Image (cartoon, rainbow, N blue to C red; front, top):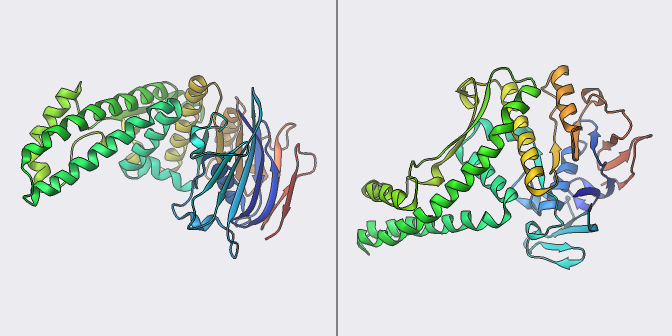
Amino acid sequence: MRVERLRMRDFRTYAAADVAVGPGLTVVHGPNGAGKTNLLEALYFGCTSRSCRTTNERDVVRFDAEAARVEVDVSDRDGAHELSVGFQPGEPKRLRVDGAPVERLTDSPARPLVSVFLPDRLELVKGAPSLRRSHLDQLVTAMWPARVATRAAYSRALAQRNALLSRIRAGRVGPNALDTWDGELARWGIALRDDRAAAVARVAEGFPVQAADLGLAGAAELRYRPRTRATDAAALTAELEERRQSDLDRGFTQHGPHRDDLELLRDGRELKSFGSQGEQRLALLALLLAERDVLTAERGAPPLLLLDDVMSELDADRRGLLVARLHDGGQSVVTTTDLGHVPGAGAPGVVRLAVVPGAVLQDAGAGGGARSEAA
């Protein structure tokens, strides 16, 4: 699966743009504030129907415009396909694949997988466990799409159990009413825990190799830390029953996969607490690259990598190491304020897109093409 072109209208700072994406590395360069990150966001939006930057998607609509539209042309062994996302605040999104309406782009086999690095994604390493759980669940879904139902079923059971805890605290029902929901939560909890553990085991094999290739000193390790030690649903049910009174005292479920974590370590110490920002950045890149290799093996095609301002805090050696890894296979789009920060940016086959406020220009001598209108 390969992304060929991106078309956007009234998206962020772009009134209209039509941009070619290279088969390998595409470098988007321009001054700060010109719209480089907006272009990456549009690619992500067109492939997933979601923003990678904000939960308030009204922000993606260009100022004074009523709606935004993004179209992505992709190709695979079956030929060419078009994904489109139309968004008007206050209205349901209009999603289409090859012109036919769909409820979710994620259900379409024509949708390419996408992995994104943004500067604020360092929170995945140093932030709250909920961010890492969410990322891990997205990885599970990308590897095994049918297993998305497991996470949804666990979330429903957890919500029902928490609601029941509130009713018991209010005296409307007795504590024994939790028996059924303890069993339901445990059944889906063990399935979710096993899915996460299997995904981490696959990625953990390549993570230290990628980290070493990027120049992260020491022994890198990726470790899944489940909340429960239960081996089956019956054992997790017993753990929930043991903690029932504590849950009633606090009013919510304290135990289960919704409290799991993913640890990124170097020499046995968590990078969250003991890593510099540069080391955390290298670890995050190593994680994304290790996931790319696993997804390529599992799904038969590498995800599109979107890397925003990734070079700014890497030294020259590590920039070269990263670009070498990007050339290993698949597509990647990298933004930078300085072409000199991307080794080999002028090499044959590398597509270069120059961004000025509201417009994208194809560099002379680079493959593909770009047309745009300033906002």
